[in-house]
Image 1: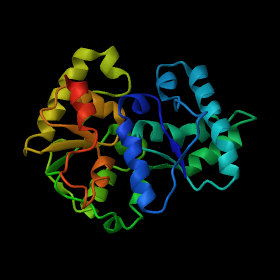
Image 2: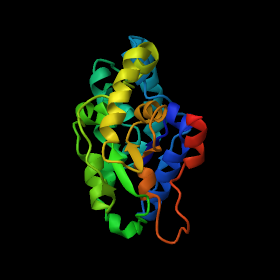
Image 3: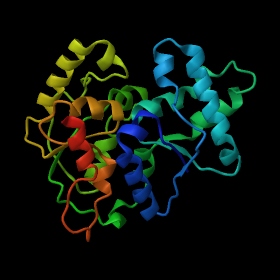
Image 4: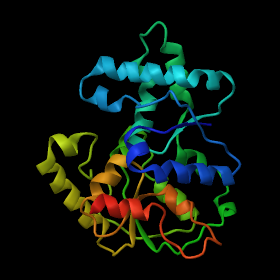
Length: 254
């Protein structure tokens, strides 16, 4: 399967895709990056730089196409904001005479990593459950863009992770792409309300499925904020358990 490494996540949270590769490898699935692929186009397109966003999409299609023709089974993303955009490639390039068919094929192959893992035997991962009590933040892009509001909780429940109840799971965390940069005061209010809803039952860690949400919440959360795939990357026999990426998270919040 092809892995969209992303741009912000690749730089700010490299532990995420590294964990995804290890988890998929233990399940016998190879995640293959395409070095020429880059930003999914969401930021440009959502900021009305439509031509630039469409060029981002065309570049990715060109980067992936040889491997798609060679039999790649899916194009997977570990960031739901990017995954939502991949789902729209076919629609947004539908009138492009050169790229329409290829864009439709890319959208048909697009999957969140969770969609793949939900069909796998997670018991074979030998997950170590000493990560404690976990609160799940479901990104808006997963709820509304991909219409998979229970994906993260379903996977972690199947994997035996201890989840704590949270309030107002449908509400935005305030990140919303570039919203936290362009509307910082309102974004902080949304963030603080979301953190209160996520920490009401004293979790040891908050997990998300989107890099923007993860980084935004981490600026004020009283507990670590991780991508959920990192919990599946912990397995029995690792010795003393520390959540992957802890050092990077500490540097981010300092």
